Image 1 (cartoon, rainbow, N blue to C red):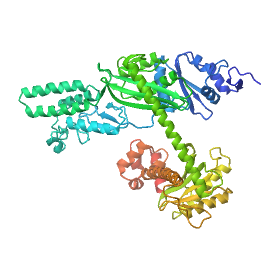
Image 2 (cartoon, rainbow, N blue to C red):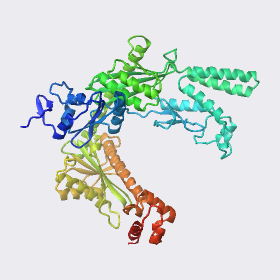
Image 3 (cartoon, helix red, strand yellow):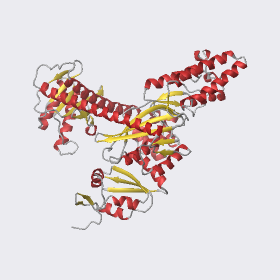
Image 4 (cartoon, rainbow, N blue to C red):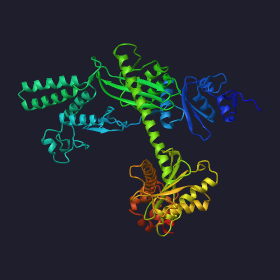
Length: 623
């Protein structure tokens, strides 16, 4: 056997390494940068950064290295390697964050949030900014405040600010040009009417700055400003304006009294705690702005059970703050992280000023860390209970289903099929897979129906889909080899019989049933009458869930093909006619029919067209 200078070791056994990978390991530079490990299919399975690429990457393949079980599993799958050299460790960290976000590698610790939290957004890039509620943070120049864990609270705050300040209440974008008459909101004093050209941009911006003060947690500063303006209005005998300011102050006081003060000195900071055990890892964050606790949020970390807490926290900081709408002046952590210095440099670059990363051991800050950790533990406990209850429900549903359908084995793997089309247009089929009662989306498949009869035939389409799926299994394709314990067909007796014909023709004996939508009746092959399961039975609910997923998957694909058909033009199929030439031809001639009637000289005179292309277009359209 040829000696391999670098080997992948697992329990004392060397796994042969691809020759190309050996060669790449010898040419690694000693500079900072990022490295990407790939598997045999070319998929990126891990992204890392290093101050010295040569030293760090080669360490994965050394016999003496003490690697965690996760790293051992990863190294055994590495078939290829790429690297990108950077000028500094900071650049490597920024690049690593972007690559992880792009590839979502299997063996990296990935941040997962099971909820979409609402934010308040001020559209600062507009001449007259609007206050909106959104669940998506974009890099568009707007200011985002949140996240809010309670959607009711965010809408209450939204309504309060619109009642208190004359922001644009209709949600429309206005340039300040007089395009319409002012609406009722202007008459009520709730809007400055930029739609009618009546709003002063400077006065409106001053109002927006007051809203920002409030949303940044600086409500006390805003309260003092409004109180001073109220007294000035009284002295100037502007009693109507003073009354409006008084009402604003009362509304803000009501909200400020509900906010919990944790730092009298008005600090902006994020408090982060992490709890990990065999169930996984959970990160809990508290958002403190202006010394007040404004919100909280939790995240789950993939691969969290095996990694060290410091590694998990470091990976979380990089992933969260890459897209965070705001970086505070201080971040509190439960323990030191190895990359704290370089992460602080990166956050300083993002914030525009210094960011302090602290590990408190006593006092109010340490108490906040403990409170966040307690919340993270409660989240993990809740997650475990949910999983146990879900597993128990699914097991009970599968047992009920086996008994109701008299199946020889527990239907652990269920495949469901559906057909979608409109009068035969863009016909498609779908196959969805549930294992253990849970969707297995990696095994989902879509079918574009190949046989197009003069009149739509759902039965023939179902027969085609099942035949193609079973043929792939017979030909030994790895992706199709696993057969189901039960086939569920969306439809009645006709669709089920078509599926049974495909099973018989391909030589398979797999239990199959149909589920009719109208009365939710289960159609069995050997039963003349359909079976009506109890409306509240777990078995029926599981079948409905699987059937609905097959229908959704088929309908989504059908809509995609139908939209492509609607927006497609004969010009798209002519070689050499790209989007620019297509747009130019349609703009000058107006329609495909007029292009067809044009002469070669007329088409050749269009900018970017040639005589040869003009002849080719007419030949295609006139044939």
